[in-house]
Length: 428
Image 1 (cartoon, rainbow, N blue to C red):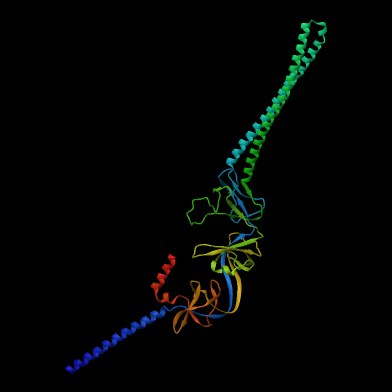
Image 2: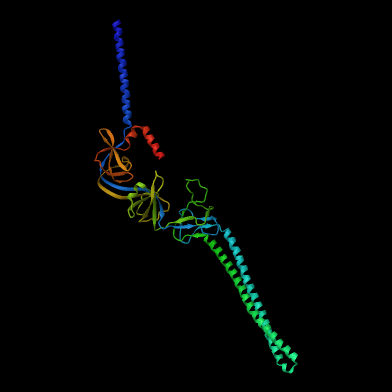
């Protein structure tokens, strides 16, 4: 009986040990599976033909656009009373936008009233001048008559007493003095009258200019198109808009400043696309390169164009980009300003080169490298970069078929390190 109990105890002990071993093996198996499930993504180095293309999204604009602005109408702000609809077709000479002319009409009525008053002042000045001249002429003629009569009396002096003769001589002298004074007054009053008329003429001309200026201001507040095209309403930059919020388009009733852009009318014969291209692709572009432009709203249609101009790089450090202006070589009646478009620029074609996805290429202190797999492990391997785009990298220093990691193996196997690296990137 004792031997039986010992045997049973040994059997149970052996079964327990086997269970512990099996449980440990199961945990090990699960651990391997978990590790396998988080394997580093890889890709193989390829050899072949690589087409370096640049893709971007842009907005359709007129090449030689006509910009209609708020006029300089003598006021700081003005209200829009009439405005064309967005995308509406207008012909040369059509009214596009009208502004409130209440203040300008009041100024015009005041200027016209001043002009009428100035005209009457001129008439009055001329009438007074004529009256004064006639009166002065009469005085002059009267003085001449007095001189002649006095001279006639002087002829009788030989027959008259000495005292009377002397009186006649004095009368002639006095009449001559009055004649001289009358003639001098005629000249002075004529000059004075002409000066008064000139002053009233100047006031009349000033009032006339004021009236014409007020009328021109009223006319300028009706803005007409100088060319045929579609209306592209500009954003309202005078409202209380939160920073970062999109600006609404102008509409009837909005108040604008003098000189502010209101409506853009693109040239129907010249179209351009303004696109923001990533900084990485700037070295692949040059003026004159052919471009394929697909308009999002016109499915199935594409247009050819060429790079017209390349702007400077702007934007924050994590999103640097530059503006590229694409001129379309062909146009169509369905094109409208503001349409979204996708552009594809083929900058270069390389034959029989080693390449891999750009995601697999890393850089540290200007040194490009990859994580090359060898004996089941990944190690940094220096390469020489030849060309790079958003999706492909052409390089030397690798062989066709080599396996490289698509991400940093250390971060892939250590999520905490990956999170720490991401935090450092955000802090920078």
